[in-house]
Image 1 (cartoon, rainbow, N blue to C red):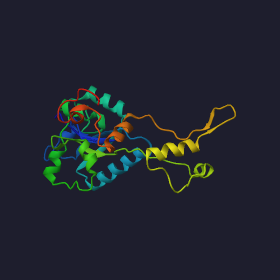
Image 2: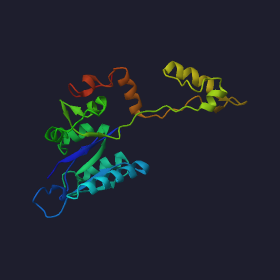
Image 3: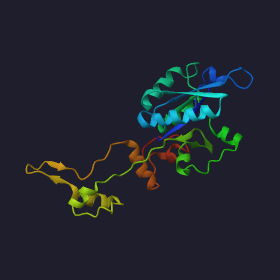
Image 4: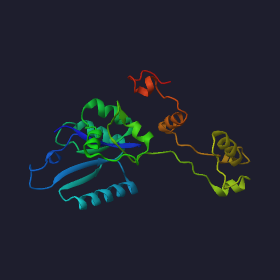
Length: 232
């Protein structure tokens, strides 16, 4: 059976190439159905995955899930490409957002929309914008899970030192720039001793800033009306 259910960093969970054990359905085996879940969640998040799996297994003895950490999103995705379509492929896997197009084109993933429709699963608690990311042609391809979002932290002590109100963090880019200039410090040699702010250089930050403005990253509706041909 060749099809993966995908979890959707933003990530989603996708139904992928089922392993041999996961292919067993009612009556095919006297034992429980075994499902292998690949994921890229380390540390506390990984412990959270294990807890969810343990709770699921305890509540459904006829279905047993084994969660397997695969390293980074890139490590997991590249490993999947090497086992895609074989008995070594996972039943369910976590895929980072930019892997969505590959999973759709590969034919290795079973869209979760079919399961949602079959079970009349209530999606009303899901954030519409996140669901839209993994939806193409009106069909949700993978289930949103562990979707990421940039968060701004600020140092209240430094705010006080700079004469800023520690209970009023910046809410616009202009305010952020103005506060950062006041927070920045330099030593006698002119070198910075405290930066006004630090920003991780993640490409998806830029994508989200564009989305917040209703702007496109690529042409053809971000590749949804037709394949994207250029960045805009």
